[in-house]
Image (tube, rainbow over all chains, first blue to last red; front, side):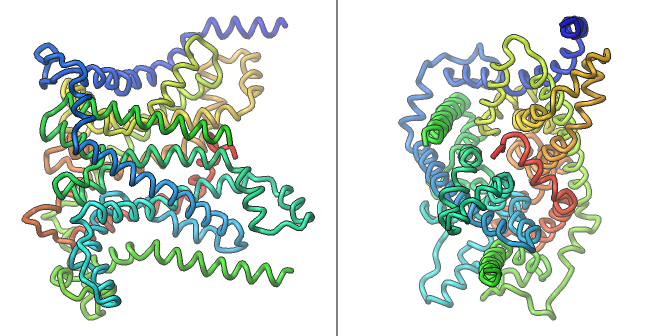
Amino acid sequence: MLKKIAKKRKIKKEYWQVTLLFLPGVIFFSLFTLYPIVKLFIMSFYEYKIGALKESTFVGLHNYIQVISDEISQAAVVNTLIYALITVPGQIVLGLLIAVFINKLSKAKVFFRVLYYFPVITSWVIVSVLFRYIFQNEGYLNYLIFSMLEVEPVHWLETRMSSLAVLSIIGIWKGIGWSMTVFIAALTAVPLELYEVAEVDGSNSIKNFFYITLPSIRNTILFTFVMLTIGAFNTFTPVKLMTDGKPLHQTEFVLTWMYKNAFEFRNMGYSAALSFTVGLLISIIAIIQFNYFKKA
Amino acid sequence: MRKRKSIVEFILFIILLTGAMFMMIPMVYLISYSLRPNSDIYQYPPTLFPGYYKLTFENYEYILSKSVNIFIYFKNSLIVGLVSMVLVALMSSALAFVLSRYKFKGKEIFFLIIIATMIIPGLELIIPQYQIAVRLKIINRLSGLIPVYAAWMLPFSTFMIRGFVDNIPREMDEAAYVDGASPLKVYFGIILPLMKPAIAAVSIFNFLTCWEEYGWAQTVISSEKLRTIPIYIAGFFGRNNFTQYGYVFAISFLSLVPIITIFITFQKYFITGLMTGSVKG
């Protein structure tokens, strides 16, 4: 008891030290993240003129109405959602499958882990450059398709759906290694006894997977789901460098459209409103994912 | 039984190997094209491998020649990556320590806000961040990149490291307090050394993030000499619609070398880092 009181007193006396540790991070976070969020929120209600807020005119929800009714921003949101709907389950299923397979091996685990992780550490700029070359009209892929199937070359990056397909394939290709690594980490934490007991009861690998492995790593799957969904909405570089919204803004993603409005059309208020609308959308999706997994 | 097991393992091995080949084809393509003359790159029909008589290092020679000065871009990327990484490591580990060990009003709300900001795509905040950078007069400077990168990485790093610190037994620091140590002493003497694996894991990820960042760098940097590698590579695009892919691929491969080295050296941390913190099974 005495000890406890003494301890409390000591800490209270040296509270400035705790503050000293805490403050730099708080100040930095407030200045470069919190303040921008608030500023952006205010901007979204203005016809914003670069410089001072004073000269800008308050327009209420006008920017939001524009965002919601604008065909291009609708297309950008839909494109991003399609991309998320393909790449998130794609990365999770393939990543989990590979993780389970690698976990079953007695040799060469590290070898495969490194190989599958390779695309993750390759930068998005390089990946975009490379795949733009592979998917160009006279590219290697079209040549292969032509020489094997004798069909007309596909103009991969010139129509909306094929561009989305290409971007999704790249997204999955680049992301498998990450989800695989997360799942390997989670799999090693599943107690082996569970499998041993199951083996005595005459279970098989497939049953084990569905009745032991999946329930044990449920939290990890949720974590991966949320992180990858956020990641999908973060997609910017490959779109910017491979299609840049062409043709006619049909392949615009949320971030590329936001960026264009902000830095090319100088449409700051609209861009801010778009950011907030999408932020709200992501929050709703994340909350739904959390609730769904909590119930299941 | 054992025989059946080894057959299954063999099949899995083959499946994994086939998959790995698909994963690696684009990289093989990149290296293969970086070793061909530029005239070869627009030939039709294209080939996956160059004829051996055509192999050349001319792309690399050009890239490494004095006229290109690629080392400046490497240096820029390295400076920005290292400074941002260290800055985030210092701030997030201290934040994680305080959040994990001390009770005060509004603490949980603060932590919740930090986590909530992880949802926001980094680039969404660049309009106000750009205005801050203008006011701080760090536009078109390397120091203009660092605060924004650090701001992007701080929430996730704090979140991961806090998860790790929560798992360090409290008895460790409580014993030190009883012995009369101050909070600073406990932090630097006991907790920080124990945090090392988590900080290392987070820092590797953070460095990679900076090393490959494109959007913000493209927005802030306009001088040729201040470019980082990603915007230098992307700069090859769009000039007269004719991209000199040979050079691009050669630089791309060179910029991958440090990353591959880091990855293979710290390969262990990639797993242990992910295991701690958020992922608790």
